Amino acid sequence: MIMASQPSRKWNSMLGLAAISLLFLNVAFCDEPNKLQRKLSASLNPGCRDFCENNTAITLVHIAAASDTDTIHYVWDFTGKPTILVALTSKHAELHIDWPRLMDSKPGSVSFTEVPQYTFMAIINRIFQYDDAHDRAMLDDDTNVFVYDPHNFTWNRSLLWSNEEDAMMAINAGDDFLFKLNAYSTKDHGMNFPHLLHTSNSTQIDIVFNNITNRFPNPRFAIELLFVVSEQAVVGSEFEVTKRKTLDDEHTPGIFEIIDVLSPGAFTFSAGGYIEFRPVSYTHPERDVATSTETRQSQPVTVRSPSAALQTTLAYALYGTKLDSYLVQGMNVSFGVSEDGFYRKTNYTTMTFQVGYGMPPVEELSAFVLVVAGIGIGVPLFVLIASAIYVCTKKLRNRDRFQQQRL
Ligand SMILES: *[C@@H]1O[C@H](CO)[C@@H](O)[C@H](O)[C@H]1NC(C)=O
Ligand SMILES: *[C@@H]1O[C@H](CO)[C@@H](O)[C@H](O)[C@H]1NC(C)=O
Ligand SMILES: *[C@@H]1O[C@H](CO)[C@@H](O)[C@H](O)[C@H]1NC(C)=O
Ligand SMILES: *[C@@H]1O[C@H](CO)[C@@H](O)[C@H](O)[C@H]1NC(C)=O
Ligand SMILES: *[C@@H]1O[C@H](CO)[C@@H](O)[C@H](O)[C@H]1NC(C)=O
Ligand SMILES: *[C@@H]1O[C@H](CO)[C@@H](O)[C@H](O)[C@H]1NC(C)=O
Ligand SMILES: *[C@@H]1O[C@H](CO)[C@@H](O)[C@H](O)[C@H]1NC(C)=O
Image (cartoon, rainbow, N blue to C red; front, side, top):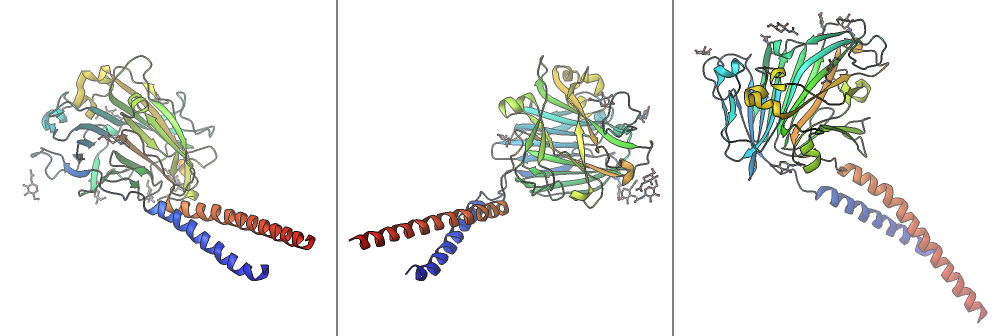
């Protein structure tokens, strides 16, 4: 009797397993599809007719990302120090540029037709090559540094491409610094490592430090980023660096951490600016775990007299001396970790980060992980339940038999 019922029990457990897997698949794939959240429209050097024509050295890209209710403007500006602007406005606000005055770094040369509800700017202020004599991978004030001023770079735009869903630009300073910028209309992971999760509220910047002449025996690179937010600078208001752990490293193998640098508005009201990156740098064009090293960031510090420090940036063109009342902070990010062989090992290192409005998106478990987890939990659970039932029925039967024998 018991022998005969075993095959059917096995069959049942198979069905159960299939049902559990299906359930997880269902949860995973019935997730809201990646629907268009904003419609993009990009323009190069808007309103510049004369000297921008036939000149690949002048690059300012404006992308209006419009939703049903508002517009987020992204500006990728390479006319001064590279600056990424994220501005939230009503649906109909337009960007206006007075080109001759912008070229002279005049305040007010860039404006919106209405005051934006919020603006956030990330500026690549300086790039450092430094001598890491003691292999500590830390940029200190007493290290020997060579400073690159990105304002002095001669930019060469090699690719610009856009439609309603994506915008992409590649722009280089010689063969040394290779920049790639993206804007998106949906929530998804980036195409290349580290596959950062983006939304239509963010834009991505990827920088390659490519085959740059070594100036020290043990060279490393670092970058100084400055952040300007349209939030008043008050005592105690500071950018906050937070580290989030992720459950799986499916998208960025080997890296379980995400670093967010949040403006006070972002971490108190979820309405502010942020920078987000994974603490990873790739040391080879074929990005992989094996060709990766770490990054380290310093604590944000306040920039003194921003309107003087930011003269040659879009921030000054937009705000002028008003900058002095806004919160302006900066931080350094250094590439490499002790014992990784320094920059000279491959003469290649990368940095990828996102700049956005609101809160950085949270990684969700993917369909693949859910199915694996479903099988991993489902099978043992089913075996457990099946064996419990088996033991129970056997006990009951035995008791029945025992009672019958007693009768
Ligand atoms: C730009 O190049 C085109 C063709 O090469 C030429 O016809 C045009 O006059 C140039 N414009 C300016 C402002 O130099
Ligand atoms: C940048 O160029 C200016 C002049 O064009 C020069 O005075 C300055 O020293 C340069 N800065 C760097 C870091 O090379
Ligand atoms: C700009 O880049 C393109 C493609 O990378 C290259 O062919 C061209 O020679 C570069 N121009 C300058 C002025 O460096
Ligand atoms: C790196 O630059 C050197 C000159 O500084 C050049 O000879 C070499 O070919 C370059 N290597 C690559 C891989 O581009
Ligand atoms: C990196 O570049 C330096 C010169 O700047 C050169 O001496 C070194 O051999 C290069 N390293 C590799 C791995 O090519
Ligand atoms: C970045 O590092 C340089 C060199 O040590 C230092 O002078 C500068 O103040 C640092 N910048 C920030 C924003 O911490
Ligand atoms: C994206 O921006 C909109 C404003 O248009 C804001 O309401 C929303 O909260 C932002 N999304 C995230 C995830 O922060």
